[in-house]
Image (cartoon, helix red, strand yellow):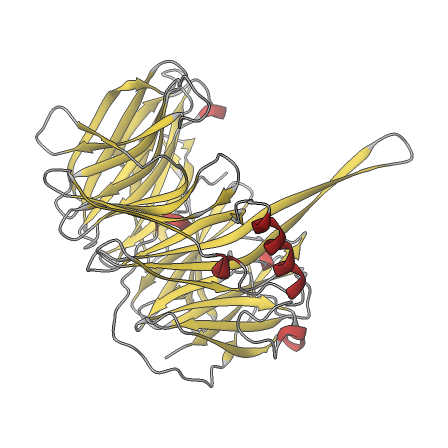
Amino acid sequence: MKNIFIPLIFIVLSFGFNPSSDSSGYHIKYGKIIKTKSHYNDYIGRIGEYFYTNSYKGNNTYILKIKNRQLVKKGKLILEYKGKFLRYHFSMIKNNKMFVFSSFYNSKMHKEFFFYQNYDTKTMTLVPELHKIGDVPVKSRARAGTMNYAISPDSSKVLIYLSNPDRGKQKQEVIFTVLDKDFNKIWGKGTSLKYSDKDFKISYFAVNNEGTVFYAGKHYIKTSSKSNIPYRYHILIFKQNEDDYEDIEVKLNKNYIKNMVVRIANNNDIIFAGFYSPDEYSKIDGSFYMRLDGKTYELITDNYKEFPVSFITTGYTEKQKKKIKKKQKKGKNIQFKNFILKRSIMRSDGGILLIAEQYYVESHTTNTLNGGSYTTYIYNNNDILIININPDGRITWNKKITKWQRSQNKWALSYVFASYANNIYFLINDNPKNRMHKVNEAGPAKYYGNKESDLILYKMNTKGEITKHFIGNTKNHNFIMSPAMSFFDNNAGVFHLFSIIPNKSFYPATLDIN
């Protein structure tokens, strides 16, 4: 089973300031069916005119080499260590080279060993030599450790960090390696924290351009009152050639932090941004931005801003707005519900964009005549929020894209994202009934993940102005875009789109936005 960290909420891209004129005339191009007998793929990256993805079938992992919507070559990953099976984690392209990350569980030593290998993209085979990253003690194969990564703002450093399964009252362990862009080891660390694994939960990881490593997490504490926040945020800072780490407590006002990202600016300032609420429930009241000096770790900026009711009710029908007014008259708090912070786009000046999507799952249990039962799950991916925060912490504008997606087939829901040429883009599947529906007009029709699908592209410029573009209806091409499998290639300015079709094959298409 693959174990890959998808830091949909940890992607850092550049976002410029020069306004760009809007354009139309986008056209989708369809390719040839790629038979892989699998239902999933991951984008790895691009080398020259080829891009690479993974596909999976059972315990087997394959690398696909694709050009112009056609499969050029397919290679199976032979992952072995002394004749034993290696568990695949992820692949990465750096400096025009591909690297594959895997691990091996040693049942006698009760340890998980983590490695990376070079991958030859010409022969489509693994280079046999294994490079050890580190190891972690684990209780069993079923509770093996995991490996993830983070990249510095200038892409010169790669942080590979390992994590243990739940160790309960034992001390939390930190194990990581910092590599340069050619994957030469710069330094690493393996140490125990002063907190137990039970009381301290690590949430975010980062590395700056100098190779300093940052861990952020919640330290849970006992409180004397239910009104007190039961945790404190801490930043743990690990520097090369220093034995001990620095522990900085970050006071995040008197609110529950629902979703948060931690970013390192180009000048090494530490930035916190996300959503907050005064209660523990799945609702958010507003957004916040904090900035700590990268040298002294003193607070530079601290700003919280509640969402205006007019923003929350954007795209609401008159009936829905009347309900909100009744709640206001009763003194009830008006909040967003079930929104998840999925991306942060950090600008070179320290400003940041936060992008969230409403997501929740409904379960319905049905009793059968023979006394049994079965449960169906319905996935909901709805409105998108975009929050723009300036470097001084001022939250300058909030925007919403209204959509309504609901289906048992979650792979057709959500969106494909792009940040390109001073604009950001959201590509979605939509109900054809919404084709003439204006941006954020009330009452869009639901999209149920069926074959009758319109591809819609939303484009936003640096002023927060949104335009909507109809790309085409894909029914005649038997193409239903899977946002989970599709991706945007920043080097070429092209969306690479994939459709899952019944015979377990990929159906590729491209959308050029240049």
